[in-house]
Every structure is written in C-alpha cells, then in structure tokens.
Length: 402
Image 1 (cartoon, rainbow, N blue to C red):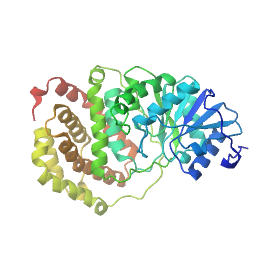
Image 2 (cartoon, helix red, strand yellow; image 1 turned 90 degrees about the vertical axis):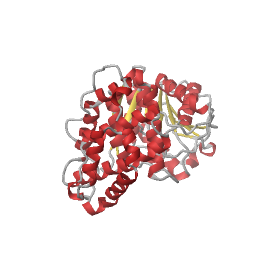
Image 3 (tube, helix red, strand yellow; image 1 turned 120 degrees about the vertical axis):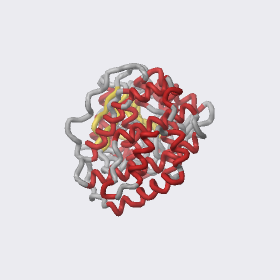
Image 4 (cartoon, rainbow, N blue to C red; image 1 turned 90 degrees about the horizontal axis):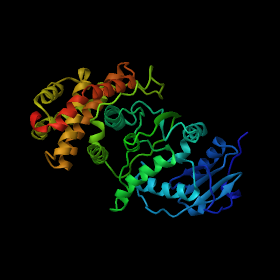
C-alpha cells in the first residue's frame, strides 16, 4: 500500500543534495501541494528524488521524499502554461542537484495520477527519450486552439508526434532542459519571463529524441483575465515567431512521423452540440466577413476568399469548413506575420473569427457522430499535404501575392 505524505510530518532538507530525479513544481496552495506530494510518493516508492517548490514554507521531506524550497531566479506570473522562467529555474535546480531526469509540472499538478507521473519520468530515466510529452485525455471540446493550430502546424513542419506540443507537464533529460533554458534566457534577459517556449520544436531542431506518453485525464488551468482574442493572439503570435526563427530547419525535406494512432483514443464524453449552440460563433464569423474582408484580402489569396464567401452563406446545419481551407488560412497568416503585411496585432486579431468558424465547423461535424480525434487527425493531414505551398511562398513570396 502506498504511504500518504502529509505536511505535518515533513522536515526540511539541505538544498545541496543530489538526486537522479528532480520534480519541479509550480507554486501550489496547501491542499494541492499535499495531494501532489502524496501522488509522487505513490508514483515513485523508494525512489531517490527531490521535489522542488518555490513555496519555501512547504519545503520538507517525508518517507524518502525530499522537498526543497527555492527562490526563483526568474519569477513568472503565468499560471496556465509553462513559461521561459519555469525552464530557466528548473535548469538551475537540475544543475544544483546533478539530476539525471527532470519532471517539470505545471499548475493543477495534483490532478495528475501517480501512473502518469511515473510514466512521464520513467521514459527519461530509462534513457529512451530526451523529451517526454504527455497525451492528455481531454473532453472533445477542450484544448481546441491546440487541436486547430498548434498540433497540426507542429506535426506538419517538424514531423513531430506529440498531440499537445505546448503541454503543461514534461519529462526532460538534462541536455533537453539545457536547450530549453538557453532559449528561455533570451526572454528572461529582456524581462519577458512569461514568454512561451516551444519544447517540441526546440528539441526537434537539435535531433534529440521526442515522443508522447499516456497521461490520462488532467485538469488544465484556464487563463485568467484574458479573453479569447488576446489568448489566441498571444499563443499564435509566439508560435509564428518560433516557426519564423526555425524556418531553415522545417523547409528541408524530412520523413514524416507515422500516424499518431490507428484508432482514436477514448476521450471523456460530451453531449452533441446543436446548430443553435454553434450559431453565436457562426454569426461572429459572418459579422467579421463583412467588417474584416478588406484585411483578409491583404492576407489570403482569391481562392481562400472565395471559400470564405461560400462558408458565410451556409446555414448552420451545413456549416463545414474544409480542412484544406483552414490549413491554407493558417499558413497564409503565418506568411503575413513574417512579411509584416499588416500590423501584427491587427493580423492576429483578424484570425480570431476565422478560428471561431473552424470551431463551429468542428463541433457541428463531431455532433453528427464523427469522432473528434479522427477529424483533428484529418486536419493535421491537410496541413502536411499543404506544406509545399508554405515552403514555396516562404522562399518566393513575390510570386504568390494574393
């Protein structure tokens, strides 16, 4: 039987201790920290490890679990994703404790089951991977920015398998963490500790091993104080900038990864959405079609504009955005971001209603019985198929003016 660890029977340890496994935690409240330590104890019975937390009052140890507090070198105010500060802090901790594997956990870490913690860390401890990325079992309507943009683009451009390339938990080898910390330092040195770091692309360009592991269900923290427009602009803008910086890598021909799955993984169920529920998203797109058409015409070629015109007059029962159209839209926005066709803030704002049109199309299709994961895989395949278009326009943009 696993032993339950409580804060009352924990004593603080020296921070100079070494350990093969370092588990780096975010700031957690008392109950979340207690449950996380309990899960760690069940996941790694008898394992030599150190848990690091920025909450000095929680720094303690029990039944072989050494917990150490630390003062972050680069404080972060973000609570819903890993940031540059998180990777820089973990790298300093890993060096201090001479760790051979690092488990970087995000907010709501207490919702990860012990089996998920063990699998994520063991893939690195065994020497199989430099970067282990969790595959979360999320409800079909959760994480749709990831499904619509992050996963398809990462898979198409970097040939990488992970379904959640911006996962909030990671298993890391020391050399992988060093690479991410180097990227992070470029942001923290310019006072941007909350900047996004893209682990999959950073590790892919240096040829280290990457794969995903099953992590089951997990509570993902929601951004606070931000609306969809600002979240999408922040995430997509960071992704576009990262892909611009790594263009020399993804333009080279490379063997694509095999399909991520032969049959869809089971996901927590949800009730089908009705056309009436999707109507607000469709109306938002239709309104934008009238108000933003001039901006879109600076970014998108005539064929895409024609596709949007047809989509704008479809009734909700037939509202389906072709996967090829969505892939071409995102690629053209990436190109416009690179070329600064219009102000980048305006550009990313103009993407939001198009994303809402994709979401409406996705949830309506899956409401008719189409498996959500199969549709997302089809979207990713469309991005892969259209990659030659992106490469051609990237190299010779003047030949492809809209």
